Amino acid sequence: QITLKESGPTLVKPTQTLTLTCTFSGFSLTSRGVSVGWIRQPPGKALESLGFLYWNDDVRYSRSLESRLTITKDTSKTQVVLTMTNMDPLDTATYFCAYTEEWFGDLDSTWGQGTQVIVSS
Amino acid sequence: DIQMTQSPSTLSASVGDRVTITCRASESISTWLAWYQQAPGKAPKLLIYKASTLKSGVPSRFSGSGSGTEFTLTISSLQPDDFATYYCQQYNSYFRTFGQGTKVEVK
Image (cartoon, rainbow over all chains, first blue to last red; front, side, top):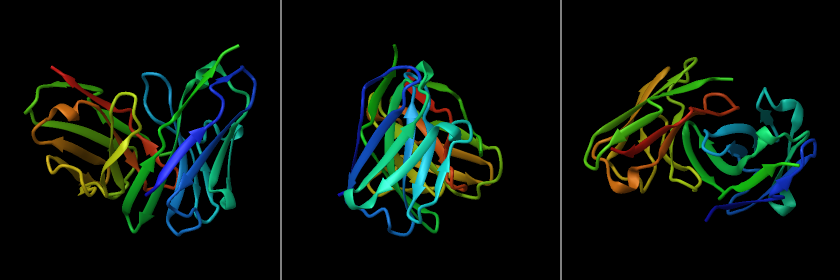
């Protein structure tokens, strides 16, 4: 069974750096075709992709946020970490991590429950 | 980044109705398209991948079609659990992007 859970602070001050951790089980991030992505959703708004870390260590970021984002993995601890610098109230959102396995177009995906982040002084 | 555009943004319907949601890509994505369903306060769940392949366990009233830049999600007979928001997602590029969502609400 594949599970993912996001953790991190609920409240962050403007200009601070946000660090979120996705702890997962049931798969290996070194298996071909596997990725873990970070997606956020501001209150009442749409899903927005932030970045994806692939099995081969390739990382792809949102072009509009790339300068503020870093996604890393800790294989031994089965965790993926999202770091976002210079937080702004507009970054207030629920942040999800999601497992995806893609194999010749076939896809499977499982998401964490999400963690709410509020940016306020 | 590949832009995904869904229509309509909101759809009002009744139980038993047939509903169709459209998703357009800013460039050709072949059939590398997935559909997700998101209930209020919950994480999205995968319904369909490769434009038309139903994930195991998803009711057969859901179907998807399309290729290239135009895709549709159809619910043949809307059920109470189907009132939710639906998102398309392209995975033709390594940076996967979502449409802005279509909320299916009670008429």
